[in-house]
Image (cartoon, rainbow, N blue to C red; front, side):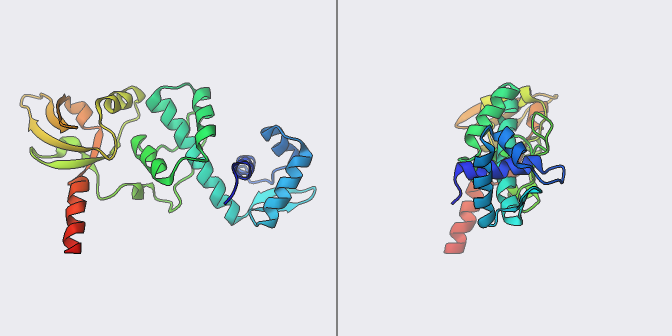
Length: 235
């Protein structure tokens, strides 16, 4: 199990080598704000554990093993930044600081939920690319084939998979109303003449404008449907 400090080093090397050139010890020391001698000691240790390739006077590169860890940490960092910036409404610096605190402890499941909630973003608030999930297909973060809530028929149940929206204010509005990935919803009624749809959510009845309902992606049946299938399989 790697320590947070070791993960910080791998993440740092990832950032410095994104341009394709080895990272220098002095660059790592400057970015992490530690002494060069401390950097040398740590990279030699990580090289011995096959996370890094290190050649004295030439620099450091990630091995495949190290790249896997670094990409996972950097992905979580930049997704958390996106979440705090888009959903919470934090400023860029605050989002970065929160991401630094959470990147080492956030679970893989929470990472997937954030990816869904922020509509699988490609870039962090600073414009840096967010590494893809490990299987290279973020669509796998979702189960089944998502569709807009608006397309459900009256009386149908579904589970919210993600919010398909790049407008931070609308995302925050929907989340404040309770439309969060993983939540069960039911269409009660489609009102005529371009009116809203009536949705059952958390035992409440909500009138939702159609332009907002079109931003909420769902999977028919949701968890209850999957549970019944599992129960049938057991029987």
